[in-house]
Length: 409
Ligand SMILES: Nc1nc2[nH]cnc2c(=O)[nH]1
Image (cartoon, rainbow, N blue to C red; front, side, top):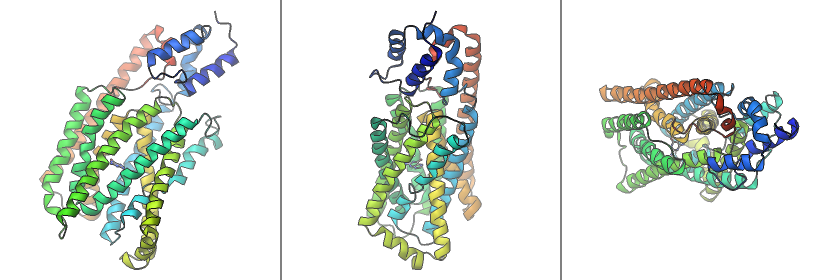
């Protein structure tokens, strides 16, 4: 029978959930040993209590009542953000915007928007946790490092977009999905299943068809050197992004609260903005911006600033959604959702810019939707099976303590 008082137990439980890796290991089994060895009286007490407490604390647990609304919200952010950021970036370049630094800077400069998901839950009394509680130095420096990596990725994306046709960069970027599958199987031991392999293959084929169909869209006057730069930058961006996703998943394994994910995201976006701002300052980006607003942009000054502002907001939604998806599901699911949107973005081009749609584009879109839907359906079935399994298993409660990853999603 437990002798620990409920308040001590709750505090220790909270401490464990907040930093499960304090014993210096990252292995789930050693965490069980850690709990059972260092808190001998706690385990049996928790058998009766931890299920509800864990679900209330661990927002990435699929049994948490806030899990599904958060997942839907993040996917909507990713979908709307990615689609509109891509259309707006195209709008910027179509109407004679040309600065690569401006296009890099707008991808992260919307970081103050992250203060909403950080402070709103406290103001609305959804949580008692004060923002940045338990945010250690290690997590801070990790976030800065990953933020600089993301800033560099944003720069590479901008160079790619500036030199390559949209279809070519979509094809090259879709290679990030294969890299994500490989890197996440190495970094977070992602299982390669029929469902995720099928999805990766279908979405990759979908992008290849799309790119082959629109290879004639190569801009006139593009030199071989520029094409090579655009090509290398886009491949580099795909590689960096496919490293970024599993690295984030690895870090999120020690985070159980969505608010903290947004706090990390804030630090990362600030680091990426510092990088972009230094680049802007050194390469006359700010004066380019002013010149573009006054003379370069063919839709006038007001529309220029509105375009910049909406691009800033939509990129932020896109990154917020990506981070949320990786936290709530896995890096592979986040990667699949982002990359599937590359093909869907083409449909956005058809709807908004009246880009021509032929048989190839239609087949590509169907393949992409098919791959994506079969994956989501597979995830849904798996989640349902897990739920039934959990209900049937009465001995599962003691291991519910361990932050459970949806590693096969
Ligand atoms: N490389 C890369 N950068 C991104 N930034 C936002 N989405 C993406 C993506 O899918 N790939």
